[in-house]
Amino acid sequence: MDVYFPLSKRSRNSASGERFEQKKPSIEVLPDECLFEIFRWLRGGRERSSCACVSKRWLILVSNICKYEIRDNNITQALNPKDESTNKKGGSVSEVEHNDVDSDGYFTRSLEGKKATDGGLAAIAIGTASRGGLGKLFIRGSNSWNRVTTVGLRAISCGCPSLRVLSLWNLSSIGDEGLCEIANGCHRLVTLDLCHCPAVTDKSLLAIAKGCPKLNDLTIESCANVGNEGLLALASCCPNLKSVSIKNCPLVGDQGVASLLSSASYSLTKLKLQALNITDEMFSVIGHYGKSVTDLSLTSLPNVSDNGFWIMGNSKGLQKLKSFTIASCLGLTDRGLEAVGKGCVNLKQFYLFKCDLLSDKGLVSFAKVAGSLESLQLEDCHRITQIGLFCSLLNCSAKLKVISLVNCLVVVDLTTGLPPVSPCESLQSLSIRNCPGFSNSSLAVLGKLCPQLQHVELRRLHGITDAGFLQLLESCNAGLVKVNLKDCINLSDKAVCRLTNLHRWTLETLNLDGCKISDASLFAIAENCRLLGDLDVSKCAITDSGIAALAHSDLINVQILSVSGCSMVSDKSLPSLRNLGKTLLGLNLQQCKAISRSAIDLLVQQLWRCNILF
Image (tube, rainbow, N blue to C red; front, side, top):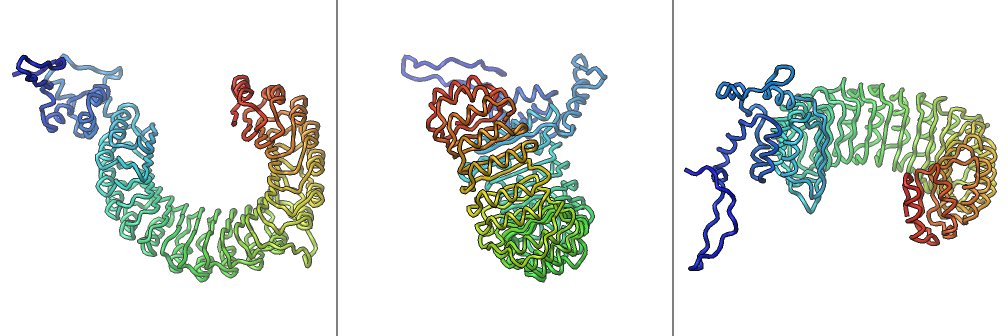
């Protein structure tokens, strides 16, 4: 009986015109069961990898051999004692291989788009098994290309028992069977991330709960068939959950989330709930069982009213909460916000987004009771005015360092009726973005309220001019470090020259993108700013002369420079940019139409360590 046929040449036609049939190697005739049995006797990872390279069929077969299915090398040695080999420590090859498979998982692998296939997963399973093990696996599919199935996840389950982190995104082809394979083989799993996996149901979570009791980080997003039953199973089998994030799962309600909170009340530190059908009763559970929660995010919860926030705050259970985000919760009012401030006594970071019913009264009441607050961010809260902002600064804790007001479109310039101004000495960072009501008088009050500012961001404030900005500058006693004036179209060279003169010893970052400045500002920067490392003068009226002034300055050491959209910067600036290249790490020349492509190519060659955008 033949056991081997060498590859034959291309068959030729006989005299009668018949073609001889090409023969295949006999081993390919064997069924999968026989090949599987042969592969079980392979002694090392190198041998298994070599066999996997023969064909896709062999790859899948080898990758589906689990650790416990590999035949013990002691039997091999008994049959052939002359073939015994040991390592330096006296252990057999089989023992070395098993120790590798049992390793902690040092490798991280990511498959995206068309690369996310069963073959790719099988190759990962075989390639990492004998070299430290796979620790983290990220699979990102696409709506038009889904080639990952249960076969690929079975390979990971068999070959990667050390897997600790699994993330599956946009995989409509993955269902319960695939995740059950992971649960059966990857018992060390601690992090599971499921996003846009419509075929995954509660059955998958039941299997994960039983097979992966060490799970402590769970993220479920846009999985329409996951509901309360799966969360109940996780609650009963995974008591060490530390982080839970559930988003846009319509079948998840109060019962499922409450079970997770009650079972992990002493371990759960991070909780994020978004677009769920939970009610005020769930907020009562959060208030009672969130004893260890330090980071809480509540977004788009339409069935929660102000009573839910009031009950949660008055339950006094969120004593350790440090970071709190409330976004698009239309039920929140001034009453609920004040209760949250009273109940979260250690709250340091607070972010409010699209809470339309909040007014100045609620903001001021919250500022009075939040004694540990360090950062306050308000975005799209259209009933908040300058009165609320200024009074909050007057009544805030002595620890407040950062305040931000973004996209508050109906802010009006009301600066009358304020109590006597006492400065907020702790505030170091101020950000006002796209708030049309802010004007020069508002900046003047802020300057008096915040004399210790170091970071100032004023973006798209068309109502401020040089006069108002100068009043703010002259009130900053600590020295400004970072200044962002992007799209403040009414600020001119006068404001920039005064800024560089007053804060020459501290200024490190300056963004003048879209401001009405010219070369005069660059002359002032070159003369004064010794510590400036990041400069953005995009879409400004600067010319080659301004760039030359920067290049010839002995003080300037700019590392990041952006002149994007500066139409009057031309090829003449090439020597100056080359001179600046001694310190430059990043250069933005996009939309500089007066600079030729040949000049850019030459600059790229000369400034080889600088990242140039063009």
